Length: 316
Image 1 (tube, rainbow, N blue to C red):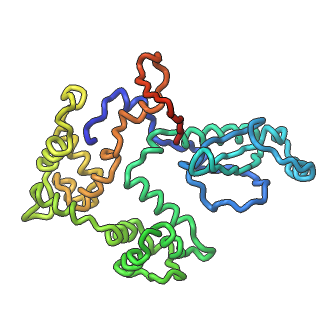
Image 2: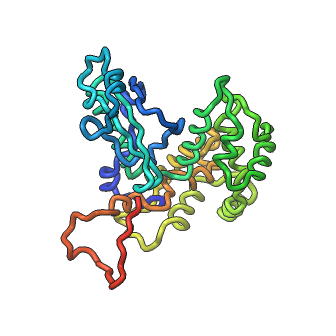
Image 3: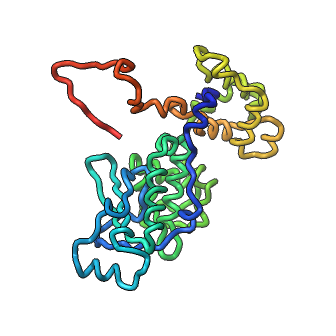
């Protein structure tokens, strides 16, 4: 919930950071000949292993081929295995060989850190949509075009609506067509999403908050909405204080796409929708994320519900 973020949790929950070495990239050899996805979502990664815990090739000829001309250390120490899948039962393995032992160890630690980050596992709606956009931009043809079949596959719940949304953006809509990568800008992507999934109820709320005769809300109207409409009145005002005008202005500057409006302390319906989809409005408050699976307290601190036919189930 907006404004409900005690300072202690801001220190405990680390934001997602990708190290410079991972951004730069390293050289790996993929040794097992299986069909893999072109892109691997980090949220699907369950484990990243290196060294003796990784899966090494059993074929002697393949081991010899991978180890020829490499002075970066023993083959077993340069192995990197990434375990991924939709859950802990249906898993697959991606096996790689690094040129140096240190590279395999660093990538193993960094990938596991990214995969287990609580904030990365509980991203905002906008962050998930941005991830989908990045995936579309990376899955291009050899001539740098985005196949429309990837868009239809990504939004497969209603193909007719996808076709209508593409046509509304003046884009080709045939499944076998493709569009130049440069034509599918973030602005066009947002326009596509607005046509694919319209939100008339947000327009209604926006008008009710005070935008009846003008296409924006003032900073005072936005502050009233956050403090008295969004905020849970049961919250302690010391631990969860009301947002001040300066804090609301920062939110407006963060989400309002029109800089001239943002400088005046005004937010449009587009900026208002971006705010509602942002990290301040997650389904689960950030201060609650690290309470899951907290089993470090004495047994008497937990309520145990048991019966004669109780089954233990595990989910990720």
